[in-house]
Image 1: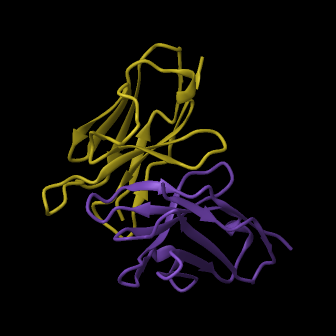
Image 2: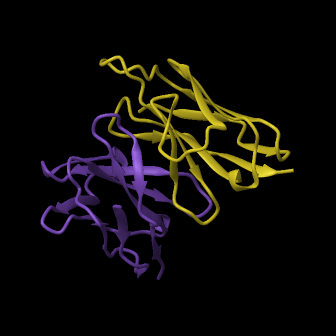
Length: 113
Length: 119
């Protein structure tokens, strides 16, 4: 199974400041079809997860443009350009290149300083 | 627009089984897959398995093989996840999530079903 790791596991940020989360996979996430099936999800307190980014850098419908994804191979990053109060929650990276199983990172908790 | 509506909370005894449903309200499963993901209290997300309703083919995480069964009823656009031989460690919120079969991401989630296993 592909193991996903994230750093940091906790990220206190100041409103209006940027935030960055790193995600690393134990194997390359490049699929034989040339795509990389790495996505990012946000889980606000008491809510189900919500898709933010798919295939490394594609912002899902309705996701604010302050969220961006980048990376390749085994190293990926989610950036929030200016953190807003509604961004508080836990962020997960997830790989779908090699399954079963789909695997998630442990999550990074973002809260306000 | 389509929503995934899950069945209500359950309390079960150790050793018993639970069956959770997930209905696509306002639409159908179409060509999507449905996955089940669970989250133990204060923990992260854990993928359990998926089914492609139009094909009726299910895949499971090795961890749950033999204990979980995922099925789907195309006529009612409802998916089911049954977990047997329950133990206290199975106490969790169980989510169904719609999975695109082209770009492999979860674009729609149910609100979750809390399953509590307690004697």
